[in-house]
Length: 80
Image (cartoon, rainbow, N blue to C red):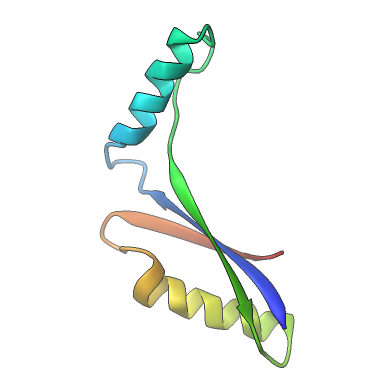
């Protein structure tokens, strides 16, 4: 059993209204040095596979087919 994390974020050229809201709220709380915030999601998977490399390959396929929207998002897959 391998634990794999999939990180999904909006592509850089896609507006991130949630990130902008977080940035504005941080500024109101006194964190004025934050110039940009991008919000994404983390998906943790436990995958039964013959090796960690195979588990990463399976998770990458899942991310490309279901866990992300390739039109608007990019993803990264990494073992935990």
